[in-house]
Image 1 (cartoon, rainbow, N blue to C red):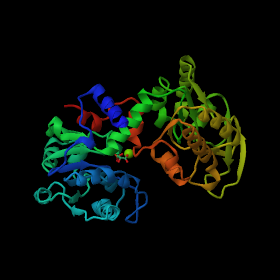
Image 2 (cartoon, rainbow, N blue to C red):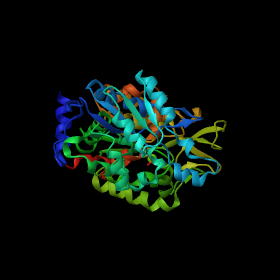
Image 3 (cartoon, rainbow, N blue to C red):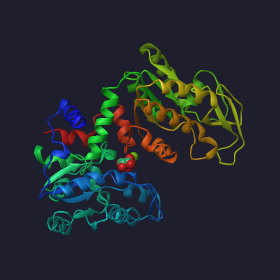
Image 4 (cartoon, rainbow, N blue to C red):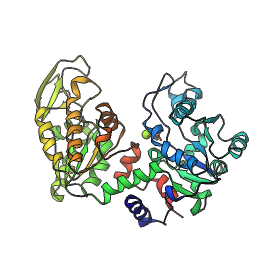
Length: 421
Ligand code: 3PG
Ligand code: MG
């Protein structure tokens, strides 16, 4: 109850008062649910079903409430990929394996229709009985989806009596099914699903309502990918820990020798400016003092350790070192709010996973002591899953780009479209 009240407050603070998912009466209604089933596939097999499993409470909630469910999603970027990689066809982007996977997870039949924009889809949707589920084929088979085409959105809107947006992972796209479609439903017939409610509530808690000290851990390969989020965090965080490949651009900027480590020459000045701004705002930026270094980017590389300002030529940093681990742990253990986006090293290779695991340990320990921790962004989530920490952090986001843009301070079209009356 407490949680619901907070969600209601947060949702109503900028826009209208929205009905919460659990308060909505789905009885006898066909709910058109936009989900993010953009899951990784290898040889037609789903390699990580987190996003599918996340939507089950929403789907089950509608069915238990006496409604039927029409699910729609995209998968990959079919048209762009087909252009780039000859031999690829639309069939490589089918959502059919997802229908099978979902049916198994729910223990229930999931009907599938190949042409989301056809009259047959409309007929099939209209024929659904309470308790039944239909999944539409990949919406991006239609170029109109990514263009945010109004006519296509209107056509999709006919498939449901009520629109439920549960696709947080795609909320940063102003596409036909994620944003434009909301125009075709009145205020009392559009709402967020449970994934979206949970994600927005978690992200708003951290961005607008963080208990201090607020420690942000930002990793990953490139400064350029994380620049906007770093700028925004300077206004809200107390400490920013920087790890991963992006750290070496900071060391180069300070005149350090980084050997063959990753560097973005055109971002050197940016990191200098960022450090200055942080100082002006009283935000402490923690850079890793040392690294695990390797003679090549490979699982069978020779490995050593070194200070980050003195990495020899021919060697590259692929993980944070032991001193950095200890320093970061101390900062994280003091936090009351933690945001973690991006790994500390190339954790996919065993030799370079220690730093990321060490940070995961510290985040789990701080959470156990009462801190609120939000982990988001594809690679850090993969790391948390790999090391078995999923249940030891407060919230694991299903959003990559969407979460990043949220923390950059942008309004996400998928969220705004539903919130507006
Ligand atoms: C994602 O995984 O980033 C979302 O599903 C959105 O997909 P996109 O980046 O191809 O728009
Ligand atoms: Mg993306």
